[in-house]
Length: 83
Image 1 (tube, rainbow, N blue to C red):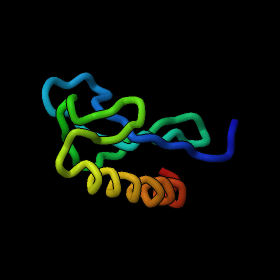
Image 2 (image 1 turned 90 degrees about the horizontal axis):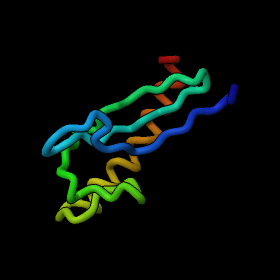
Image 3 (image 1 turned 135 degrees about the vertical axis):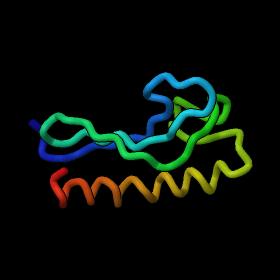
């Protein structure tokens, strides 16, 4: 068992049609996974699966910066609260 958490940005993990949510997937040290909503929903043509970022959107840079800023604070909160 590892003693650290890993995380990544995921889009449409439930196979939605149309706009789908962008979420943070966190793998906790005990092997469990938690998903945290970012509040963003985007269509398939605005998601780059390889880089795991929003593209082809007028707000792509701003939204990606928000997502990158959310990850560390969300992960730290989960670890501290042992959720």
